[in-house]
Length: 323
Image (cartoon, rainbow, N blue to C red; front, side, top):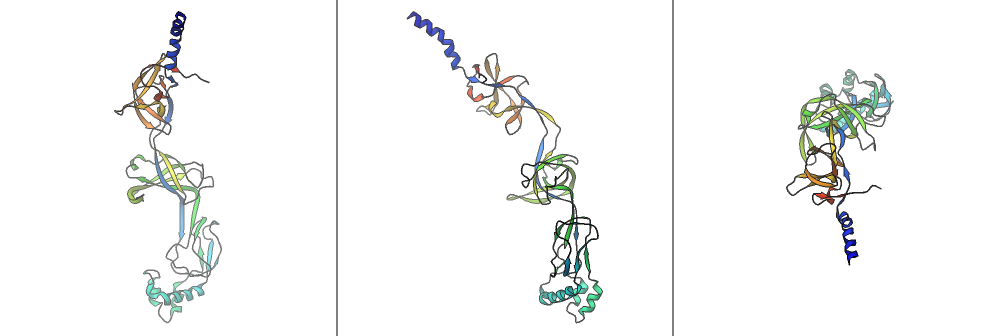
């Protein structure tokens, strides 16, 4: 009996040790951080010139295709003037009552029904050729050989594709945080895993209403020059951009699992020292994907329990052995 009692007494410390919560401790990690604003937008050409025709035309030959490089003054298409005259007269005779206002010049509109229409065409100086208005890449072409083209929209467009720019729609609530020269990182779903850089160039002077989901919001356009498109970006791509809009600061971070919250909403951690832990109330700030910044309550080198939910109260603990 005496030996049993002695053995039980000797086992008490070991049993008590087993009952202590097993914890892992960490210290806060420092992380350089700059506040960012996330906005959506599109890629667009830095410069774009459209071919606007004064009169309807019937192209005879189209000499370029979309994607071709052209120089200022290059012939995009030749015009079949005789076919143009016939097509215009035929179209006017068939759709005279339905023609939109302003489609034809006043002189042509007045005389289309006249007997001497040929005399009118001689005074209009229909173009024999359609020329490129700039040097760059042909990005759109609305002409078809042998078919009448009505000048209700651009006949073609020539764009400068390098460099490209972004057009971003920034909420009126955030536009005051944007300044020319700020750095942007952006992604596009068209390029998987790719990240690109840009710099804010211009903030537009007016705002407008834009549909966002089921409601309209007031936004201001911001343009930014793309640093390098790596020959994979195209005008029209949608982008998601992050704009750096604050000074860099150093955050002291703890993982979310190291922080608890009581019924009153107070956040706290368990601070470890000399084999025991004690609750410490803290305040937090910026939230990141896996951690949160601690703004009050801890010094940089204090150790806290990582698996905080395993501790129920202040008291002794045992450290988890490393493997």
